[in-house]
Image (cartoon, rainbow, N blue to C red; front, side, top):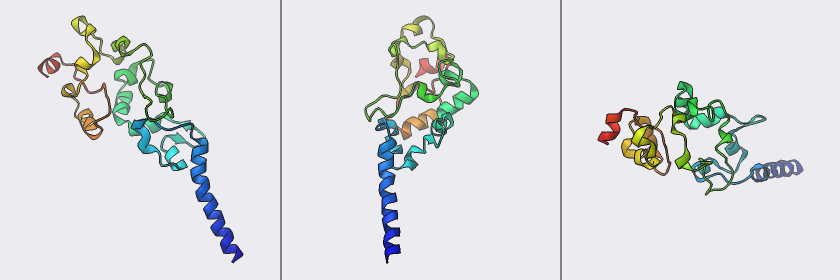
Length: 171
């Protein structure tokens, strides 16, 4: 009987420690776009953090395939800009700051973003346009990005626009 109680006690302690361990090690809640990852166990942490190695870029790109494609092709901001390529994702995308935290920060404001870092320089009249003039769902030409937006309607993206003049001027 004592052996059974000892086993039951150990199992109970282990189950209790699992939730406690998560709360002990977690530096804070994830931002809303990543909140689905949290299951309040160390298994939830392992979706992003590799044991004994911390955050790994491959884990981020495993979920963010639309970025992985561009990184692998060395295209777009994440694939060619010295500010992003080959750098850890968390250099710019800070997590564990709460549900209301933003994951994309614009150090000097979005209007000051240097669009040429994406590989597509804005020239002439385009240079003065507000970002949302072009970056809207109706102008997304990439079917994979359209599908992503449909699957995650609250998610903002600046990806998927055509660089063909006629495409934008028709949409």
